[in-house]
Each structure stands twice: as C-alpha cells, then as structure tokens.
Image 1 (cartoon, helix red, strand yellow):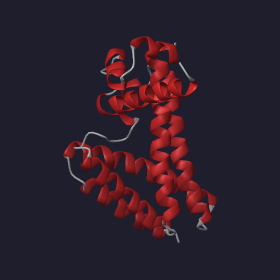
Image 2: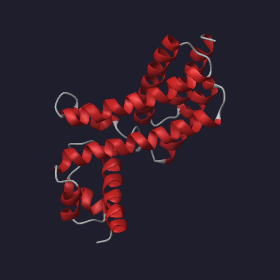
Image 3: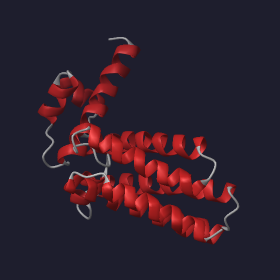
Length: 193
C-alpha cells in the first residue's frame, strides 16, 4: 500500500468516526460501523489505530477541532468587526445544522459529554479543542483592541454560548437559538468597546 493510499484510508476512517460520533456519540459508534462507513477493512482500522476505539475517538475529536476552527477562523478573518463576525458564525452554524437535517451539531460535544470523567484521553482532547476555539476568538478580540482580561472572558462566553445554542438548535430543530445567541453575543461584545 502506498503512503498516499494509507493516508487516504486513515483520513476516511477518521472522518467517518468524527461524523458518526457527532451524530450518535462514542458509546453507540462501533468499530465495525466505522469500517463500513469509511469503506475500509476492520484490519485497516486496527492498523492505523492500534489503541482501538479510544485512540480513534481522540483523533476524530482532533479532526472535529480542526474542522470547526477552520469555520471559525474563516469568519473571524473575513469580517473585521468581532461582534459582526461572531453573529455571522452563529448564522453559519445554524445554516449548516439545518442543511444537515439537524444531525451535524458540534463535532465533539456528544462524545465529550458521555466520556467526561470516564475516558480521560477523550476528555483531554475535547478540552484542547475548546481551548483552541477560545484562542481564536481571544486573538480576534485582542487584535481589535480589547484588553486581555476582557478578551479572555468574552472568548469563554462566546464559545460556551455557541456550544449551548447549537445543542438547543439541534434539539428544537430550529435556527432560532443560534440566531438569538449570535445577536446577543454581538451586543455583549459591543458593550465592552
């Protein structure tokens, strides 16, 4: 097997795992289902992830981290005003969730919640993802002239609020929770100018 083929198979396995865990969580996602969804043999799954399902879940969370960070980074770089950028991010999340039939919420929340306190490697990977996302918001706020302490606290508030609003939108099958969160986060950010 060539290196390109190996990377392709490994990437398909990670993407399939991320998508399945996003929709049904860690416990409900089995290695046989992952291999079917990834169009890879079960042997390939074990070849690339000898640590089994936990190792694969950690890599899938890292993939979800990169995926959401890319969306967030794109909006934060495209829109100069941080308040408008966060409101735009909330609208983008709402549209993506609706387009997925309300299935594709946060790529790590379901797995992180059901693994908290029980699977430390997954918990650490999820916390690292949240830190990465907060750093993107924090850096945008700092570049926009917000003081360090304000940028720190607002970054936490933005990510926490978007996470909760996305889950609420998914449950209610409505874009409203994210749209409302985006508007109020924008107002909050503007209030610190």
